[in-house]
Image (tube, rainbow, N blue to C red):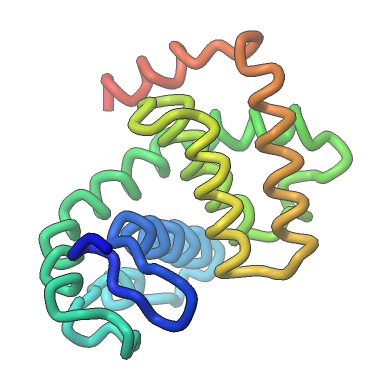
Length: 174
C-alpha cells in the first residue's frame, strides 16, 4: 500500500480522491452561495486540513491535502469559469432532465469529470468517469450513481462530436 493510501476497513483512501471530494464540495458550496446571497462563502471555503472530520486520515495525508489547497482553489475556479459550457453538454446528453432538476451535487461531480477527463485531459476520460462514479457513491444514492454514469457514458460515446477546443480556449483566456 502506498503512503498516500491509508486503509480503513476494506476501503483505501487516495489523497487524489479526497482532493476531488473537496473540489466537489467547494463547487457545491459556491453553487449554493450563488442561489443564497446571505451565505458567507469565504467562511465556508476556508478548509483547515487539521480540522477535517475524518478520523481515518493520517497526518501525512492531511499535510498532502494542505499542500493541495492551492490546486483545489484553482480547479474550482476553472470549473466555475466554464460551468455554463459544461452544463450545456450535460443538458444536451440528458435532455429529459432540465438543469434545474438535476441534483446539484451530481452536477458538480459531472462538471469535475468533464473538466479532468475531457477538457484539460489530466486523466483518461474513462478514469474520470470511474472517479465520478466513485464520488457519486460517496455523496449520493444508487440512483445518483446510475444517473452520473449514464450521462457521462453517453457523453463519452459522442465525445468526438463535441467541440472541446472552445471550452479549452475559454480556460486559457480566463
